[in-house]
Image 1 (cartoon, helix red, strand yellow):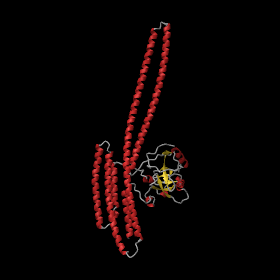
Image 2 (cartoon, helix red, strand yellow):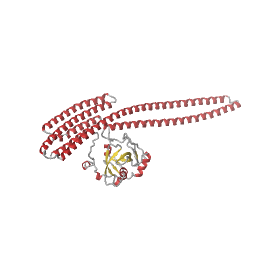
Image 3 (cartoon, helix red, strand yellow):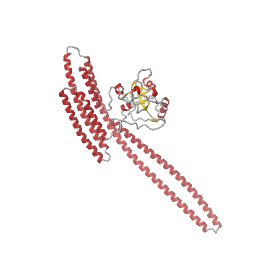
Image 4 (tube, one colour):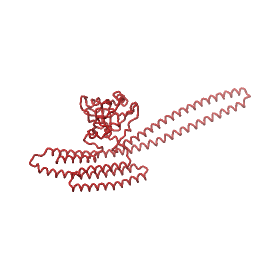
Amino acid sequence: MFNSFSAAASRRLNTVAARLFSTDGSSKSTPYDAMWQAHLAVPLRHFDAIIDDIGDEQYASLGSNYKKQNLSPAIFPSPAFPVSGSVFSSNRRLMVPLVCQMKDKPRYIWFMLHTRSPYTCISLKTVEALLGTRDTDQRIFDLRIQDESIEIQCHVSRANYQHVNILGMDALKKLNLMEAEKSSYDRIVEIDRFHSKTIMDMKEIDKKLSPDQAKKLNFMKTQSITQLLNRRIEVTEDVHKAEKEEKEPKESVDRAVESYERTARRLCSILVDAGSKMLAEVERNAKKEILKDIKPFPKDDRIEELEMELAERDEQLKESQKTVAQYEKESKEWKVKEQEQFQRMEKNELELLKLSKKMDEMKKKAMKDDEKMRMELTKKVLEAEDSLEKLADSEEEVKRLKGIVKALNKTLEEMWESSEKMTMEMAEKQKETENELEGVKKELRDAKEELERIYKEDSGEDSSFDHVDDSDN
């Protein structure tokens, strides 16, 4: 009885602690068990996808264009993301090269991103390259994708997609590529749900405690809820004030919401620690009672296994705390990079305005010079015609004036040709200037997309794949 009680309680406590300290919700258990698949719209045994336009020929074409041949040796990048890819073929397949490793050396693998697939799958040819052999009955593998510290379980591709490497939503979630910017209200609600979920999960612990311990823990829960509600009111007021009074309230809002999240995590940590101590005390007391009965006999092997399991859980909690500290450090670094991106965007906008102003000045000057030249030429022609009429009596003078008029007409034609040539040159310069403007705009869009991606990696829930180029090969 003691063993079943302790094991169940330890598993429950570990679940609560993992939810508190883990940033991606990952755990040691595999997401591909039958219980997990039962909640999916399409269980693995029924999953299929008709993909007949992706295969070795397409992988070779992509590898040539991007200088990353499929299954060629690679090195894990740092940082792991972003990654450039391609929208490929007439069916608009979203293709991306990722560095993968099993037992052999890391290699580039071209994946097709499939947002309707809950599973990540690789072809037998890919398995052979990563394992060094195709002679295996194994159908589920632990695959390191783009980050050698993260393992993602994948299946062997089959049926109508047997030649395709599919990057599914499970991999996007595990790699933290599903972050999306949320409103301050959504973020606060998410924090509330986290706190409420932690308290609800601890009900299982309450059942294992003595009446006095359960009463004490429930009182602590009430205090925790009260403190969080009071803090929520303060944070909500700060957010409303910032959004109402500040032109750029994002920094103030983020600071307020992050403070609220720290408060919630601290309160949850206090509850979990208290529950852990109470549960440990119950386990010690129960263990003492059992040891009294089995004192003449050797120590039960199951108790030793339980103690080892508890020690392992403690190590997992310590590792989770180290991971949280590392993520907080990386978050600060990304904020510094975000500020630098904003500064570059402002500088590019100023240069764009200067360039546009300069182009307008050049257009005005060219039009003014052209008009002036035309007026001068017209004036000279009119003067020549007047002189010709006045001196018409003199034949020689007429001939001379006709020669002058002919020369002037020729000069006028040459000047017109020069004017047209100048106009064409101005048009070419204007086109070059417009191309430069388009380049600057593209840089601004790239910078904006980079900022969005940086912020997405800092949020921790959903993702987008906006960094992939939309080029049709």
